[in-house]
Length: 472
Ligand code: SAH
Ligand code: SF4
Ligand code: F3S
Image 1: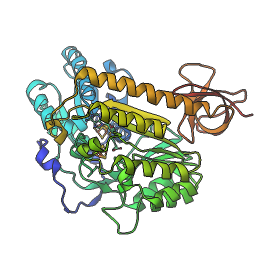
Image 2: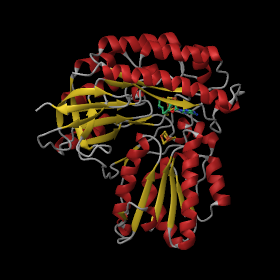
Image 3: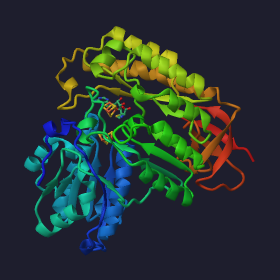
Image 4: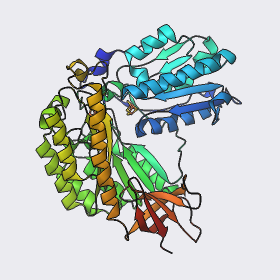
């Protein structure tokens, strides 16, 4: 049994980690044929992609997926710790599963993902959720087959959480959700330690994958007909720094772009390492999508400093305008936190004025949530809950205004759209995303295929989507 430990999770040193190839214990391959699983994923794209590997590992054990958790022999929650409500959702689900387990005592229940890396969560599970069969951390994902096998064979709770990242495991299997767009990890972990954020503790230090491994994966995806790849990392701009002296994200992007893959995206970018070379490469290649997620968090330099973001309002704005001026038709989205400890009305006004200046195409807005073990958790909280709610509401009104304004400017234009399927709202409409990452619902008289990139003329703009018709 390995338990999480925050002190260890915080350490960053030059200790070498090794690239190792994954191997599946052949003795347990298909051992659980006939059994079913239900996997619920919370959180970010990183977790979604991890779930594609978890699914593949479970299938190798012989399990098959079901869509209703009531029908499953194994329920696994791939959790997120980023804000309190992510926690509450997972624990709410555990509450429902508890009832089911009373009726089905053989039901296997497991917890993995970022919450599994939190000492307080594992403590709680050890004390109050003895019926949970196993817990494994983000650094232990490759051990899943053996952990599950042990949980079944030994009939006792298994907890395997390494607080520090181990080796970088290559060759893990993956069952992709999609046949036309794919996630590819390029860097794991985060060393930024923004004072509010739990991720550097749950995901470990920054570790880049070797460029050869990434390029090989991209080649395979191109061969399989994939149209779009999203390069993933908590901070993709740091790519290569731990491995190479002169190979960065700009080099990697360029090398991938030259392979001719139709669409390349990447996320997330911290403004800190966003270099001029990156901006030039994005501007130069048509297949690197002109869509950048550039989280600002706050418009006040005072709050940015307290957040440990390493840039001032002015530095952010300079970068923002450089991106806007250099990359044709680029859309920029952001993340903003309101109610950070010490945020005054003036600080909040600075956030609003920054939004007026940047006129974002999209923005994810959050109320500050205290995460145990992070430095901001200890800061004195001056802002009342009511005030935080009110600020979020005021902020949302402004960001929404610009989403619609930006979308209206697109009326009458033709955008390339990667078709994803039929719209959930209107059955006779297709939906997909433009190069600038806008959600487009559109009609078509001729038959089109999911995974095709088609031209769509925009007929009307909404706040969060655009309507259009296929150019036939
Ligand atoms: N690595 C990404 C962010 C991942 S978390 C980046 O830095 O760009 C996604 C977003 O969640 C963050 O950008 C931030 O806006 C928000 N977030 C993170 N921790 C939070 C907290 N404790 N309370 C509220 N929002 C938080
Ligand atoms: Fe969290 Fe900051 Fe790292 Fe993003 S860059 S994951 S906000 S610590
Ligand atoms: Fe959540 Fe972990 Fe992602 S905390 S946002 S699932 S890295």
